[in-house]
Image (cartoon, each protein chain N blue to C red):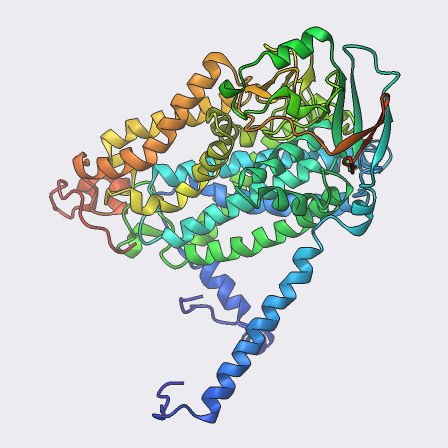
Length: 181
Length: 425
């Protein structure tokens, strides 16, 4: 390749060179796709994410129950009247992730708080009934959550998210399924 | 490699082989006849110590992999099986686990030696950046290795570190589920971490070859920072550097053995002898000691994305050091002002490490924030500014003169010819 002799017009060889290169680049890029996709949650894991039914009757007032759905931890909290009042009496505008308590529970079931159990900072499990607002306190990096699972301090950027769930009766919920009605 | 060799094959077979694969000539020119500065201290033996540690980790790791089971239900048991049932399994595992810490002790000495003597400066920028790449690969390897025993610290360490990527706007959650292979850290995560933990050391070995290759172009830096100017400044690699390196490796092995045989769990966490439990986070979760300064920087920023960016920047900023440092003088021995800042920087790094192990509250957080600001100021303010305002001490005329004294060399040149431009190493 010391002294290539460039024709003024593109030659057949130029065309073949570019076409081959383009084909190689496109097929190379396409090949990356299956490798990257193989890293995503597999079919069995996705299938295991079917809704789960939870019976609320054994959960005493003030108690927090931990369960798993899709491998993720979920808290089901039977809130006391004082805890509900504390959660409802907050000025929503002062919150980092403003959300009214009513938007985080199902209508008529203010007693029941269902939230994901991993801190929205880096995924540790916050400890129940601890911290300034006696909601949750994360031991890893000090995030504080109130009795509605809303972030009130520390590095967590958002509230503990509410998973999709619905009441099938007054004492039963199905996690992973939103009310259709 | 770039230099021609002085190797002369002696036997007919050696001659026959050399014309077909000139590997003996390569070894001869790189590790036998290669000129090394005559004034190297023991700080220059850590490269050899690191090569030894990489080899030791690969050998112990390959044997551990024969008994380890990368499955969330069996991993913890298989590690206990190694400890209790496999012949000398306890030794293999303790060598491997403590070996990681020894590897990092050696690499931190190696890195700070490089900072002190300005080894990162021209013409060794590429050599240095390859070193930063090796360090990043080491961190990834060590992190994934720590996950494999599938104890409480393994599980929650994996959760916290993978969740760092969820701070990325928009695509963060998708990236994290691709890292996990699920909706949380679980069996698929453990499987892929094992696969990558096996792969990465060999990638490190590859980059090490490039690192050594890049080293052999300009040759080694030395405590004066001035290049080899004549044959009298240098000695041949063998026997001088070879024997010194081997001696240093043996002394380091004694140090290593002390940890392995006397306090094998000192650097670990008791919580990691509790099987992983996704429903309970240990009360006090801390990374391994070698990550603590970076962990302190992560926690110092009261914002999730900001903390993650600061932590990664703390390493990435090293890459720009050859250009941030405006001083032409390599060795800190001739930089009276920078010498003080260097030791302040070392103290700040140690302090950050200490703070990383403390709970993130009150004065600890404030101290970590001050240290984090200083850490970045060292690179972004101290290094660029000092090059302009500092008056360096006079440099010796040659390595030989620095060793023997001016009179003995008898060059008769004034010793005050300081801060000469050093464009060539």
